[in-house]
Image (cartoon, rainbow, N blue to C red; front, top):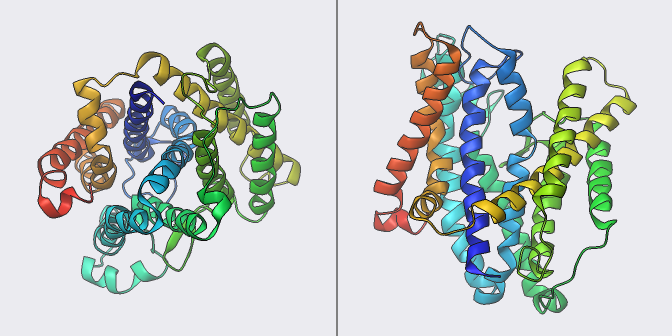
Length: 369
């Protein structure tokens, strides 16, 4: 793979993390927002509901795909032991610190913004470990670390996997529909008991049960894509003309279905349609995004290089800035559209600045971020 195409995927990850910040800002202003969301503005708009529904579908699954895409090359270069030690430092320590130290005050925003009379210390000692348990954005690091560990284990014990040669092989015309249908089937099987948006946890791992097959599927697909030479000069290259219209149409169909079918309708057929549209939109978003960034945002320009270097830090820090900003903006007599834009940009830029000035510069933190 050429360096330029590596940069295209790095730049795509930057954009996805910006969308994560935008998603979390928009949730405060969406109509029919989750009752537990950290800060809810009294004024809401259906516009932000639409924005949240569209952004929420592909962003984390694209993140899992990109993580998987770069995994095998790192394993083959470093070996399983060194690879896993590096991930324990870069992912494991930030995950534990985020989950145990940063997530509690973030979750406490739910109580504080609603003026529930409970101190942070009491909240941490009681409700946080019970009905209010969560890991904020740090859940992704825990699941990703598990995937890295299992992949490193497979590399260490399975000779065929460890000796898997990278070959440029074009996917057949039916490969992509099969992937989407398989992921839809497994997700629907779990989704019969757990809605797509429901959160749960098993011990230290926090996740959305119906999306777990998608986490796994997109991570594994990323590994497979790398080993089959996708996005290289001679390998499979998604085109904008093919994938962007499919992304647009499937997004409209998914949005129209979710907005017209009441949440109380939970028949198997309705869940099947929801899950299928979700997966088609998600997969086409992945391919359309890669196509767009390879075609138009593939170079190593100073702006993108700086953003890519600090994208992990932005993801890690932004909840600590975004939710207090959303609360501070609640009493301001300005449009919620201005509020959403302001807190998104302020949270992103502040997180980027702290990452550039602190996380990627201090010797101990630099190795992690």
